[in-house]
Image (tube, rainbow, N blue to C red; front, side, top):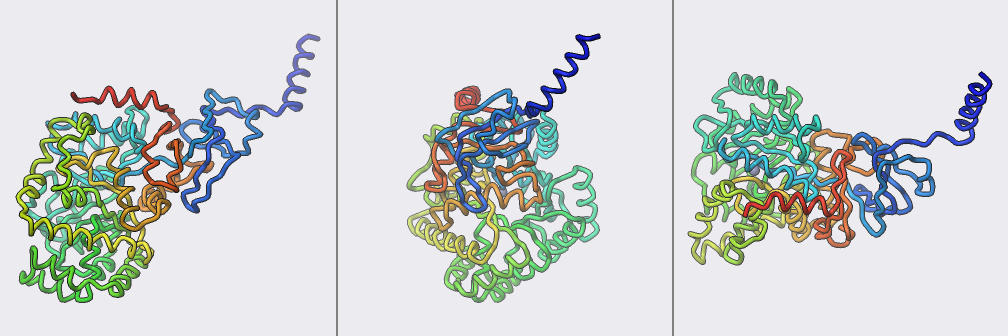
Length: 469
Ligand SMILES: [Zn+2]
C-alpha cells in the first residue's frame, strides 16, 4: 500500500514538474520555411507533424517538449507546401488503366502531392484511386476530379456525357453528383454556345466550380456573367483581349471567321487596355485561368526539340507514348510559314499572362499532362510549367502561388496552402531557394505526403521501380 502511495505521489510530481511531452510522428527542424503567401523566409522554427497533419510550427528551442518518432534535420533546406498540378488527365482508354496508375508514384516522386484531373475516358478508375488515396489505402497524390465532362452530341472526345438540351444537362449533373465529383468540366467541341452557358449556370446553382474550354462565339463577359470558375488554356485570354472581341465573336457565330484568319484577327486586334478591362471583369467575377503553357510551348518549338530522346520517357508507358503521335504528326506537317505563324501566335498569347496577373485574375499552374499531350510529362511537367510561368512574366513567388495557394483556393480546400498548424502534412524540402530560382523546385531533398516521409533515397527507389525500359 505504502509503495502504491509513493508511486502515485511520484507520478503526480512527475506530471507537474515536467509538463508531459507532446507526441509527434515527424519533426522537421532547421529548415527555412517559405511563406508562399508573402514570400517571407522564416528560420528558427520547427514543424511538428502527426496523423498526416501539421500540428504545430514552433520555436525550435522548445523541441525537447516533443516525443517524435522521427526528427528530420533540414539545415540549409527550404520547406514549401507540396505542389499541385491543376490540369492533368488520366486517360487513353481501359487498356491504359495500369499505365495511368503507374503515374501516381511518378507524381509523388516529383513532389506533386495533389492533382486535378480535368476529365477523360477512365473516370471509374480515377474515382476509385481518388477514394483509395484519400483513405490511405493507395499511395499517390491527392486527386480531385471532374469525372466525365459535359459535351454536345457526337463530340470528338471519348468518355463525355453528351447533352443536347437543358433537361439533359440536369440529368448529366445528377449523374455527376452521384459520382461525388469535385468540380464540373465542360468543353465545346459540339456543345452549342447557349447550352454551354446553361450548363455553367446549372452546375453553379448546384454549388459546383466549373472549368471549361470556351466557345469563341461567346464573349468573356457573357461567360463571366454565366459564372464560369476557370478558363482552361491561355489562348482564350488572347481573344478576350481583342478590342473588337464582340465583332469577332459574332463572326465566329455566323461562321464567317475561323482557323488561321481567326487567329490572325485576334492577334492584330489585341489591345492591352481592352485586355486589362476584360481581365479586371474576370477578376471581379472571381475567375481563374489555367494557362497550361507546356503543351503549346512544346508544340510551338517542336522544330527545335522533338523530345524523342527525353530520358524521362523511361517513366512513361508505351501505350501512353503512343497517344502522343496525333499531335506530333500535326506539327510535323507544318511548313516554314506555318512554323513562323505558330511562333507568333504563341509569343503573342503569352503576353496576356502578366496582364491577367496584374488585373487580379488568379493563375492556376497546370500542365495538361497525362495522355495525348505529347511530351508534357506527369511529374516533371509541373516544374517545367512553373519555369514557363516565370519565363513569360510571373515572379517565382507568383508561380509558386499559382500551384500551392491558388489551387486549393479554387477548390475551396482550406486545409492546404501553407506551412501552419492544421494544414495537411503535404510538404517538400528543397535543396535551394525557389524564390531566387524557380528551377529549385526540381531539387527535391524530401517529399512528405500525408505525413509519410520519402527521403531522396526513397524517391530514387520509387523512380527506379517505374523505369519502363
Ligand atoms: Zn486538358
